[in-house]
Amino acid sequence: MEKKADRRGLGRGLSALMADVNLGAADDVQTAPQRQELRIPIERLVPNPDQPRRHFEPDQLKDLADSIREKGVIQPLIVRVHGREGNFEIVAGERRWRAAQMAQLHELPVVVREFSDSEVLEIAIIENIQRADLNAIEEAAAYQQLMQRYGHTQEMIAQALSRSRSHIANLLRLLALPQDVQDMVKAGSISAGHARALISTENASELARQVLTKGLSVRDTEALVRKQGGKQISERRPRHREEKDADTRALESDLSANLNMSVRIDHEPGGLGGKVSITYRTLDDLDLLCRALSLIPRDMGD
Image (cartoon, rainbow, N blue to C red; front, side, top):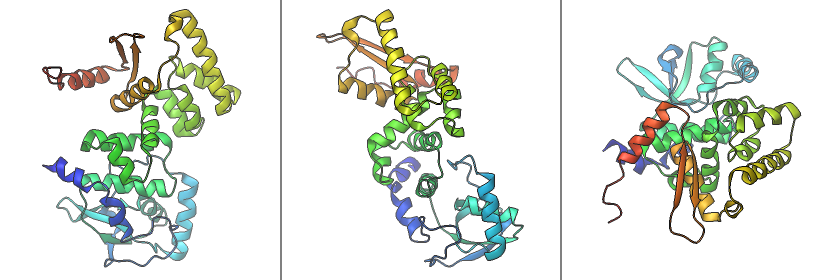
């Protein structure tokens, strides 16, 4: 029942949040509150554990803290009741909360709202995307969380967040990359464009290190991948399997994004059969795959 309620709520986060704050506004710009503001002791505010943004730039926090010391926190935080201890969970405004602690404030202005867990995650994604604060891996992980924990589809997420389905799918595919490559994207060492070019390769980590060492552009990276791919094709696969149709490639991408594992489909040319290969990186991945396959009805082909 809870999951169904979350499904219906998807998309409400943006309109609900915009009723109270203007996400496009800077942290120190006054906006007209639509709900009564309260002032809450800063120690009664707790961060959202599912906050998609994992890294807060220290220099930016310091600048905001300096502004808060001078002008205070003008834009209220959006919070919801948290547990029975009189605390409140931050729905939007964790950056202001962190900076306010640096500025040694004792209380903050808040607006209390009622949100489901799914809506809280959606709002956190919206707030960070509006301010361009999420890196590609953080954004992809947040979308994956909406899908895995709350059962939302790529289409639902795309519609709710005003993103194209291909944008959602392409970001989710980044999670199939090795962890060290994902870490490079998080650190800004390589861009999401570089990472996308490496998704289809079997030696993504090695190529990513080359990209980083040589300072290759995205176009240069794509050329490097084509060169590596051509070598692998000539050595490992028959020539008639070099090209795949767009539908097969799209299906590979969708399956890879949904499973967070590398999926390869080899369909026999002119035939009805073929082979699906799924590459898992950890035993947890294997366990997830086994559980997913066990949910397929036995009579689905009847």
